[in-house]
Image (cartoon, rainbow, N blue to C red):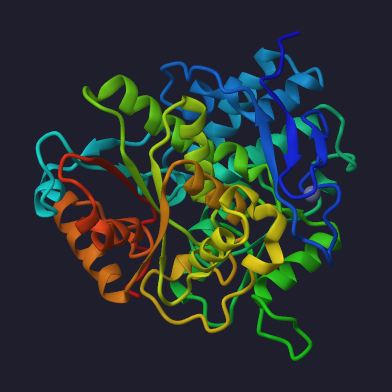
Amino acid sequence: MDMPLAAGWTCAVCGAHVDIAKPFGWRCPNATDLDRHHSVQLVQAIAPLRGGDDPNPFVAFRTYLAWDSFAAANGMTETARTALVRQVGADIAAVAGVGFHVTPFERSDALSDALGFGADGGVWIKDETRQVAGSHKGRHLFTILLHLLAAESLGLAPWADAADRPPLAIASCGNAAFAAATLAAAVRWRLRVFVPPNADPVVLAGLRELRAEIVECPRRPSDPAGDPCIHRFREAVVEGAVPFTVQGTENAWCLDGGRTIGWEMARHFEEGVPGPPLDRLFIQVGAGTFAACTISGFRMSGVMPRLHAVQTDSCAPLARAWNLARQLGGPSSAAAHWSECMWPWEQVGQSAADGILDDETYDWIPVVRAMGDGRGSPIVVSEAQVLQANDLGRATTGVDASHTGTAGLAGLIAARDDIDPSERVAVVFSGVRRSGR
Ligand SMILES: [Zn+2]
C-alpha cells in the first residue's frame, strides 16, 4: 500500500494528535461545546511541490490531500480514490455547469499600471469567480464531501445507506452556502442552511432552486454573544448534522481542499513566471479559513510571500488579535492567548464587502502565525477603499467580482505607498456578483 503523505492533525492549542485514518474527526478531540478554543492543523512533510497536469486540481494534487491519505490509510485503492474524485467531480460539474478546475493567475498589466508598478513588478490576479459556484468556497467543501463519501463506501459511516444519511449543515447566506448547496445537490445529500433574517432574497431563491432547506435565524433573547446563525448551526450539529462548513474550527477537513488554490498559485509562479518569486499576498479575511489555506499551500511549496490579511474597519477582529498577540509573546505563541486576543467584534458595521463581516475570525491562529513567520501584517481598509477596489478591479481586469471578492485589492490600495514598484504582489478575486446589492 502507498504511504499516506498526511500524517494527521495536531491541535495548535492543546497539542492533541488525531491520526489521519480516523473518520469524522471534525474537531480537536478536546474541543467541547463550552470550550471551542481549539485549532487542529494538518501535519504534513514539506516536499517539493509537484502535481500532475490534470486540469482538475483535486486530481492533479490528489496525493497531497488529506482525504486521499485518509482513504488510503483505510484500505481504499488508488484506482478507487481517483475514480471517486472524477465521478463526484463530474456530478458537481453537471449541477454547476463547470467542474473544479485550475483557475487563471496572470499579471494584470492595466491594474499594475494604474497602481504605478514597474515592468519587473506588478499585480497578479487569481480569477476564482468562474470556479464551481463562483468562488473558492467549494474547494474547502469538496474535501469534506470526499471524506464523507470515502468513509461511507468503506463501511466506516454509522448510517446504513444513503437513505439514512444525516443532513449536512452550514451557516452562510453567501458564496459558501451556494457552494454547499451545489455540492450537496450533486450527490443528492440533504442540506440545511442557517441564514439571518435579512438575507438577500435573490441568494435565498438560488439556494432553494438547489433544494437547500433554508432556516431563518433571528436573535433569541437567550442567545449568547456572537452570530445566531452559528448558534443554530451548532445546535443542529449536536443533534447529528454533519458540519458542512468553511470554518476550520467547526470542521477541520475544509482546511484540506482549500490549499489547492495556494498550490496552484505557487506552482504557476514557480514554473510559469520568469524572474523573482512573489513578494506579497493580499487575502480578504472573514472566517480566516481562506487566508489560512492559501498561505499553507504556499508554505508547502517552500516559497512564502508576505501575507496581508485584509479586513474592513466595520469588523476587524483579526487586526485586534494581531496587535494583542504581539504584546503577549508574539504571533508564534498566539495559541496560548486565545481568550485574550480573539472574541466577537462588538459593533459590526455595514460594508459592501458583506461576505467578510464575520464577527469572529475563527481560523485566526494559522493566519497570525503565517503573518508572523513571513513578515506580513493585517490591513484594515475603509469603506471608500472597498468601493474603489471593486471599481478599479472590475474596470482593469474585466472580472465581474463582488465587493467581497475584490476586498483583497482594497488592502493593496491601502498599503500601496509602502510597497516598492518592483515588487510582485498577488490578489485573489473570488465571488461573483449575485444581486444588485
Ligand atoms: Zn485542542
